[in-house]
Structures are given as structure tokens and as C-alpha cells.
Length: 437
Image 1 (cartoon, one colour):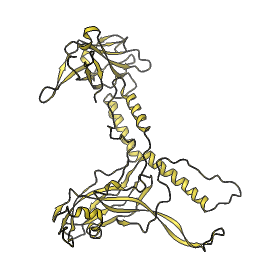
Image 2: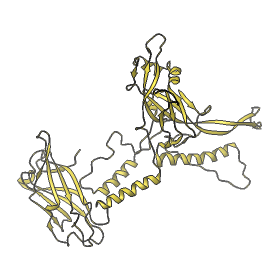
Image 3: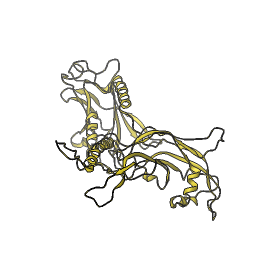
Image 4: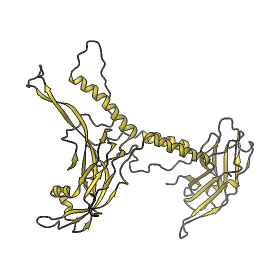
């Protein structure tokens, strides 16, 4: 399976776990006798700490380099079966650093000739025709951690043992293995996402009675509370997908098929890890843009959205949307602490599902006011707008840039642009606000 490996390899002695049962370090004291087991435990403690930090705080992916590209010798033709994997570094699903210190070359034609009898390769040979461009049967360049003992040296006999001693390896070299995987094997390539949404949307629909900052705090707490994923015992990292061309007859008694060209190298799906400095630069840029757009600040904020149906016979057709305003400390209210008409700042639309194509149409509330006593905006529906079952609405808010809504300390209401979709359902005999699913 191996296309290239860094010397002979042995299994990794350090366990690959999601969360260790505990960390134990040596405690030194005067006159203590240290043996091989003690020194091994000393190394294991620090190695395990680092790997646990990598695994849980950073994740899995390529740190730098490891670019995969077609490689044609100088003076060669347009076709090539050679790949170059540039030197680089990565972290695998066990938190182990993988360092490829020099460029690597892989000959796909040689790999194909050597592995054509492998069951997973032979299983798809019959599907490959002469001149087939294998978009349906791609190959993958994969990388995994490997370590091997090295530096043999004399080892005296253990006085408590039964062996004669002789020679032991004095070093462990942390290396790597590159391989070509088939489509059937690509499941070995893992980049576990944490938190894992478990097939659900990573950002579920926001609850209407919750402001955005509270929603994202709760979302983060919920996702991080998920169980730590168990990593595989021997994970691979896929670096690239390859589409190749095959010539010859793969169905002959003695197959003559061979790879003659690399048609494309796709690296778009490989897992990557960005360094902290780069992420900070992105965060500061986004924060600056959000501040200029009036999305963040220390002033009053729009909060959750609620709804109250009118009573009696109007419960199924009339009601009031309530959009809470969360005031900052020292902010007694908006616009001089007085009720005011808020209609110029809001737009209400309803989705016409019967039209082809479907379209949004504007609907006008009976009234839209900021009410100091209610601590927010009240948008009242008339009898026509609440009609129908499970009507989908979109309420949007936009504060004017030149004369924004402000509190008593002239801090503008944020965000200056806001929108929310919601359902108004009257199937139960009264209008009820529901989240969009």
C-alpha cells in the first residue's frame, strides 16, 4: 500500500485517545533510582500533553506545504504519471505532528503495476476501459504518521531478566508514510470535525425570543458539550484527489492496462489548519467591518422577537409582534425616552407561495411603534395579514445611517440592519409564532 515511507516503520507506542483517563508525571526526590520505565513515562507525559493539546485545541489538518502537483521532467512530453508532494507539516487525528522535510515523488504507473492484483484495485479494474478518464474511479494521495526505531547500540544484560542482552535501538524517529488510496479506501482519510453536528445543520434556526449574542453563546455551549469524538487507531490525511487516464485492456487474461497520464489534481477538500496569527488578522478585519456596518458596539441592541395574539374572535387574525430592545447600562430609552412612530424603520413582507415563481409581497401593519413601557417595538397586525395557515413572513429593520436611532447617551441602536423570518400559524385557533424549520 505504501508509495513512499520514511524507512522501516513500527507502530506508535503512544496511545491515540480522545480524552485520556488521567495525566501522571514523575515526582523526583533525592536518591531516587530511575529506570527505563521511569524515563519512558517522563517522555510519554510530555508527548501526550502536546498531542492532547493539538487534538482538542486545534484539530486535524495540514499546517503548511504538502502541495500535490503533476511533475514532468525537463524535456518531457505533456503527459506524466509522476506526482510531486512538496515538503510541509500536518497534525493527524491523534494530535501527532507529521513533518515531511523534503519533497517526495510518486510514480503512479509504477504504483499501478505493483498493486493491480490488490483486491480493492482489481475490483475496479473491470470498470476501467481503454482510454477511460477515471472521474468515476479517482485515486487519492494520503499521508499518515509513522515512527521507527533507529540507532542500534549495545545493551547490557538485564540482571533481573533471562535474555542475554546484546543490541537495542536507542532512538525513535518520527516519520511519515505516503500512499495512494482507491475510492473504496478513502474512508480511511479522516478529518473529524468537532463539535460534530451529527448530520444536523451546524447553525440551527435561531429562537425568536433570543438575541443573537445569546443565541451564539448557547449554540457554542451546546456544541462543545458534545462527546469528544474517538479518533481512529491509524488515521490518514487525504492531500489530493487524482483523476487519471488508463490505456490498455484491463479485462484481458493478463491485464495490460496502465496509467498513462494524470488528468487533474484536486486539493479543495483536504483538511487545513490556519495559524493563530492569521486567524487573529481575519477576526480583527471582520470586527472592523462589523463595527463600520453598525453590527457591533456597546449601545442598545435588538433582542428577541415575540408575538401576542389579540383576544376573542380576533385571536386567529390579529396580534402584535414584540421586538425587544436591550438597553446598555445608563441608557434609559431611545429617542429621548419617548414613544414614537417606528414605521419608517421597518418593512414587513409575506411570501406568496401560490405565485409562480414564489415572491415576497409587502404588507402594511396597522401600526409600528417604539413603546418605552414595553421596552421595545410593537408591530400590530390587521385582520388581513394574519390570514392563512403557516404564513411565512420576513420582518426587516434598517436604521438611517445619517440619523440613527440612539439612546440617551447618543449610542446607536445595533445592528443598524436586521431581518428575521418567522411563521405565523393559525391552525390551532389562534395566531402563534413559530420558528422557521
